[in-house]
Amino acid sequence: MTKVAKTLGVLGSLLLLATAAFHFSGYAQVCEAISQSDVSAFLKRAVPGLWLHFSIHLAFLGAAGFWGALRGGTAVRPIFIFLAVAVAVDTVVVVMRAGFFAGVVLLGAAALCLAAAAARYGSREG
Image (cartoon, rainbow, N blue to C red; front, side, top):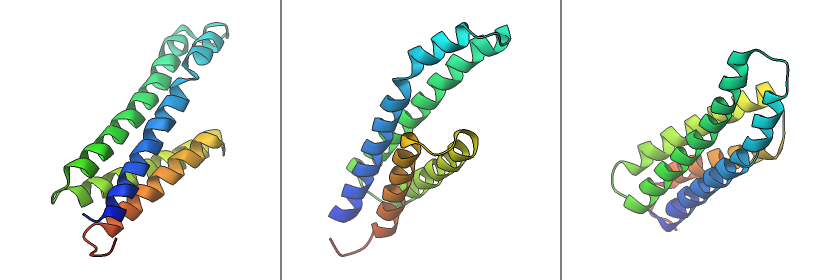
């Protein structure tokens, strides 16, 4: 793996971890807001769990990217491709459901970094 591919993979992974932390930072506010709302008991239980789930999802994707970047080997390119596609889909879904905001920028940047890392993997440059 080239230095450029490894750097892009690590950067994409860092962006995912930062996004996970950014998302998790809103957990207490979501819990408070949903508990004070007049939605059903089911939603009062489900929404905090779903919020937490997305934070954990992003953290695991970021960890997988680090693992791939630091491990190297023949499986790295497919790992970066998978992560880039997964994060790109997450980005599109979030934009469609919640609109454009800072978290979307972080997700999109991570997807681009991981896609570029996959494209650069195997290149003899950098």
